[in-house]
Image (tube, rainbow, N blue to C red; front, side):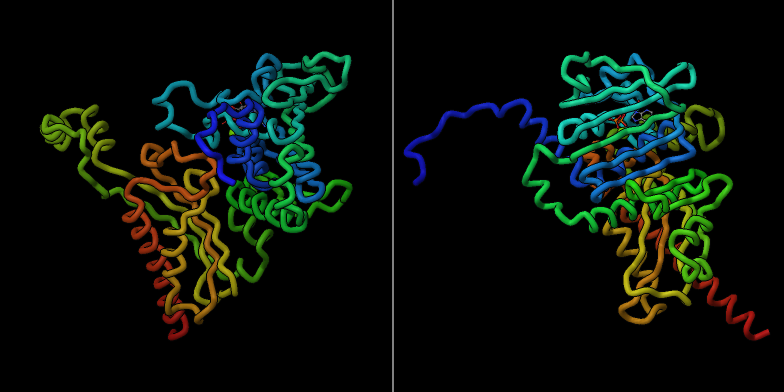
Length: 392
Ligand code: ADP
Ligand code: MG
């Protein structure tokens, strides 16, 4: 029966609040892994080794050879909103790294057992630390929580064990470890294509044969696609490099005074004004893509979308890219598309929650149209050159 009157409002326990917040960021093993890979890439790694047990629910380990973490930073590493990547609010608009809110490791520590072994090149040994709920924790009772010296190479190994051990509902929703492993392989595959210069491996714990293994430098994007998606696709790939910069839109804060300044910049009188004006009036974008030609089609679309080097979803861009193939591919079949789009970080809404893989950015509609237009032109070009070859 419903209560007769209002019940008192109480604050949730701190640990529960943190667990709920963490669950928003870490949905499943693959979303944890995505964050960890991005951290390794931010650290300048050239090799990234992923080891998985039970679809990542039992164990998710990622070993990199990046810059490592300074010992002095280990105590705050897993606290919420601690980051080495963002110091002022204005930095938000210049973001070049993946992370910026310092939430990934904190989140992991609230829903799993987290341990870190790390060594910077200046240290003589590696340091091992364990975390629970954002804080260092003793590895065994009777020991201190302080990081312990240990053997290790330069770089960082992050070990995530028993993911969602304290959120049983989440855990029971993820019982299928085969499916979770498939999602993990998908994330590693996509980052390995986008970062062909980095060597990736991904394997199940105890297995000697990795399921994914890429050579890294000096491999190229197209080679990585060949290796990871197979020869069928690779024989039919077109490269598209495109950019656009002619989008202008009125900004609410641009004053008439700026207009006057613009004249000066048009006449090249004032370098600073040019710069400022460009920033005011224009959004530039650059795209690098590898797309399948008319000779390739698959039942399901393979779509890899990176915006500013972050693996994201955008149903708008996906639909537009798939639409490019309307009338080119047989009905009910789909292309392969890898699209790396770089747009001015100022026009991406970085405050969109990091887990919202679905991104939005300024001038999204125009940029999408322009990108789709370039893909269409690239496809048309090939088709006409094929015909030409055939005729001669
Ligand atoms: P963010 O990436 O948003 O800064 P994270 O919680 O993912 O937040 O990481 C916190 C900090 O830990 C990073 O800013 C970085 O300094 C450090 N870090 C995490 N992973 C690594 C790694 N693999 N190598 C070097 N430093 C790392
Ligand atoms: Mg991060």
